[in-house]
Length: 296
Image (tube, rainbow, N blue to C red):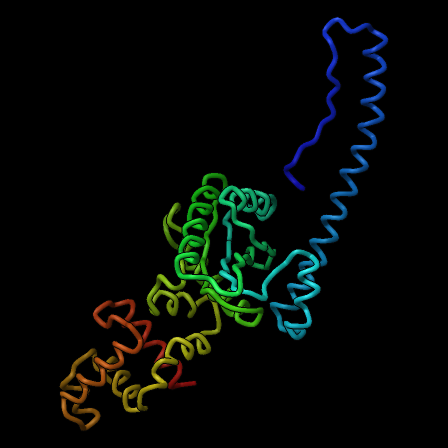
């Protein structure tokens, strides 16, 4: 309820007699006492609810308790996460105090009903959909979040990272971690452009940020997972290819295979990972990921 203001007003005729004015003043004085008590009780109830909600979600996020066992308790506090969720994470370069109120106002202005949970590095949030959400509905949700970001940024400096649409608490944890890293990456951008969606990035940008902001090996393994559908020779070939500055001739000589074999394997890796090896950042990110996994 921070940021909200309440008042008591007595409406009287301009020519009201003095005794009526004094009576109204006494009524307002008594009403102010009761209003102040009511407001304090509302604040206390809100703080207790916030603390309880945060404690439950802390268990959800940390995996301290089975997610299914927490769903009912969370639902009683108006927190939903069992359906389809679009997570996003918000960080701020401004003082932590008061930012949550501005954040909530901006989200509500776009008719976004979301959970907003304080974390060490910002706020973990998500928009909940029914059991399934069409691509069009998710796109509309992202558009609303972008407008909310622009609205909030007029009042306070924030960075917003949008995760992947997921189902349930376990996937929510993982996608919020990605959204947090995306928000950190967004923070490096110019003001007004600090809005990053995980699905709108190549593997490169995320991996480059994750090398600094999160344990790299699990992320690298996840990004390279599509290569599991190919042979080990494909991994070896593309790593050797990058080690030799993308020289097909040198790679073929190092592996003892024909140059056309190198071209075919590299093309297949490009396709499976949807990676642009002509882009310096994507090439570096893929090289880092392959090296990390090979060493790990």
